[in-house]
View (cartoon, rainbow, N blue to C red):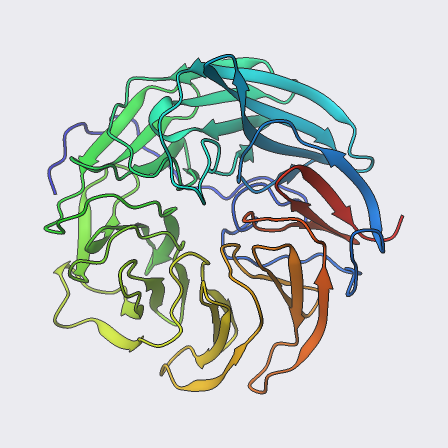
Length: 409
């Protein structure tokens, strides 16, 4: 992997500053789908246990981010023949819209019917909001909605629209740009938006486009930035972008799920046309394709939803609605059951339960464990591809037209 720009200042990795019940980025405080929130609702529908419901203008599948009792999301709204790409802020207690800031006004580019022009989830840290619109650009705002900086120099050819969300690693805002050609991974200075480093995604896959969100882990004191793309997953040094190791999975493309880490392994899906769930050991160097595979699952692997690791069990739900529980160390399947509908949203662990959300707005609640047990099935009746946000006593759901707070009033 060619290093095109090196990072001069030393970065130290830091977790997001957040309250225990914040949900400041895609898949929560640690990016793994876990929440410490308590007293969550078990049952709901379009009226039952709905604390509030507010209309969201435009279209977007960015999941809500929650920070200091405010919800942040993005949307793309038609303005004449252009798209207004905006950041939105709502009061978490009431749903009241507080501000809407236009980031970019741009001609639209064609995207997949299941995607949107505002799919990456915002990330909040150090009283700054970072929003990413793929090839359209990236921006930083303060908590009042004022733009601090915008970055529009990173050009690439999108396929099917935007996808992966950014993450924070110390002073860097990092995301993948896996377009139709010349894919790359980039780190921006979070205070200025300037490029710190940019590295080419060295892949032999015929189709270069993918949409995955990176995962930051630490192995024996060494930070690793796990970045899946078409045909390959790489571990990079988050300070410089230098490659630490790589594992190849052939022609897998349009990779979407965000990897999770545990038991000395990362768990990730290899994308279309036939997804395979892989468990890869993370203690190698260089090309570890022939040496570091622990196990794999070929039946029921997800194209889109990210995996969920709970202790020694790994849970996945396929796009076709098959939920599977495996032994995370060995790959042994404990159970595999149909949970109904098609799935894009990633699963959530909170309050001792696993929450799933299908594309027609039905939330399925499972009891974690080696035996399948469905606790509830809750029909909201409105299309959604976005993942949950969560706080004590409430779930936040972004649907096609609305934002909901599910929980007691």
